[in-house]
Image (cartoon, rainbow, N blue to C red; front, side, top):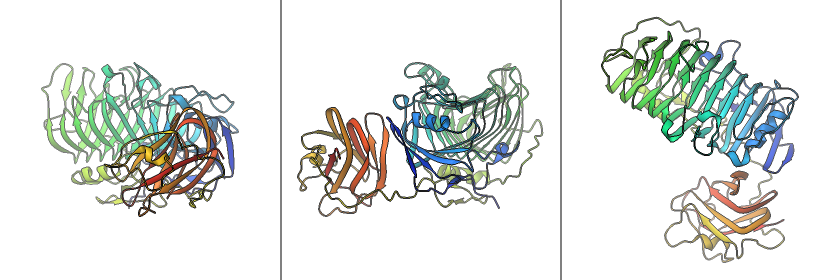
Length: 515
């Protein structure tokens, strides 16, 4: 029986708020988070990968706060779990200095540190055009996050164009339930989604989605850099990727139960003496999914149980050595850990329902079905300070006379209806979710919001996020309409984003107050 691959967080009530211009960083009691079941694959070897288990848990809504959490530890190896919510971008990611960290602006820098878990919680964590760089570090867990559109050329640039990049003596990294995506290839300014080089070992990528990229990822940056390896890829979705799923130079990779759809040029590229064990994967609508490509320095593979659905193969050549059209093993690869294989026929359904951020950390049960771990760390303990009584705070409603806009509006409704002081008019999104904003021509201090639902629609609004639209920082999350309070924030635009509802919401008023 397979043990669920999940990070189960026992969220505790916040006990301390660290003031920061970019938002609130919440410190929680020690030992509030741990990786239940432990890392799988090669990340379970070499002493295992536990991340920040046993340490303090903090909440961060900006990149600067992530760096502050790292720099605020007693040492560079003090365990810590950083729960991330909201959009992390260049505008809110600054360099922070300290004895326990080595950070940089414009990138999440996990450098010369150990024993860290970075996990998306609440309504999600999105690293927008901002990469995660792991360097000279060990025992790192990254889970339930989205990293998208990281560029190496154009503007803005981050992390050499890699969504997640590891280099320089990295050991024991587990990346799980992540979504890594680009919007094109190298000519469009993007590089790899998941790169390992310069002596990176004992890594597992599991239950993740990698899509819309020229390059899925590499292990080793040149034909002579052969000190990387011991990497496991399982239950991942690769979709619309040109090549490198992965590119393996030297070392050993175990690649099982992945779903590959639309690999446009080549797929698993084993070269320079690399050894890949390729078990029970499902390849669909793709080309040259396994072999040695673009070099005459060949690699090796052991294959079993794979399904090739509408896969085409090119002819062999001096620098082109496809394993197909009838792939056969040309080596044997020993795997030192226990694992359970889903049948390849189950892989499309299993992977589609489990891979990526925001999937509730669902995993395969090892028998062609999924299981949902509990408690779900994407549903944190409700904050008892979130009021639901829609009484009016003291002071003037700052929304009166302000501007308004949003993501969409249903026919017959208007954004302006949420700041006109009239409970008889309302805004509705085009569907059950959407966002509406109040904005001012100059910075305005806001510390309280009241959301009022129109008559006949009370109780429809479910989960929501309140955002500083200037920076993308999450000011508060919760569920249901009513009053919302948060630390006073100076901003020009504030957004109420409905992420869940039992029907079509009707927001009659989006009131804002200074106190």
